[in-house]
Length: 385
Image 1 (spheres, one colour):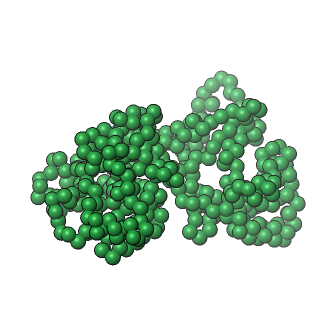
Image 2 (cartoon, one colour):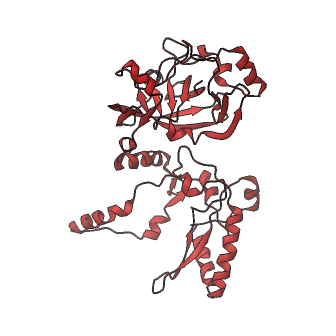
């Protein structure tokens, strides 16, 4: 049994259901050329990769890249994935037809979309058993809920955010209906199939260039950029497409705050540190959160600590820790894109600035005050004082 599942996919103008396979043996995720064309997807570039099978065979190919939106059949979960286009994902994979196994699955309270959803409602070209998507190792682990059930027949059920999947031997031996899956077999000898059962993509070949990574982060940022009625730029946090659950972190923030206050009192700097926050409030850099809002909407608290630099204009300043996290939870740092390193551009900008006859400069603090965080993301940047 292979891990097949039915999901809903959204394109620019259309929505369809497709049948896809979860394959951690593939380093990348894919969508079929047929599905991309039917959904009228707009590519975001190209990527050249070397596809290598476990037997050592390699094949270099250029693929179009897309961002697709997938959701569970009942719309209880959805996410965006970066995928590459592949002419054919694999041969058609028949659905489970063994009634004894089907009853066993139902008795265990497992709802398989690949059994309950009529295949005729899915997007297909000539066969309802066609596979038009593949979720590889780049997303497979993040979409796994961690729930596993071992069935009496020996099959293993794994729950994903898109629904349950089944894997394992059916106990019937090989039959003509079983499919040995491999993404790139068109150029291989038949005897090669018995030594290969999954696709591997070499790590160096899938690494994006620096400019591609920067563009992937920049594009969503530009699309979310707004200007409010006051003329300030409103930006959203650059969230990862799939990220770990973010806890409120309040207990950690409270413990760190108590430690921070004790340290400041010992150095007799508590009032100096507090004055910084008062100044930020007066300049509308920060704002207080009402108790009703805290009770109504869960968010995330950032611990902070003072950093001292003698002989500087600002001797003391708060530093916020976005890497702190509770057990079995992600940190804010784990959940957002890191973006390009603009520090590398400073030497180039300074040299270009010096080439001109005139230069225009601005107060960096004033410039910072022209930016505000989108209201929907403010709750993830809370702190205590």
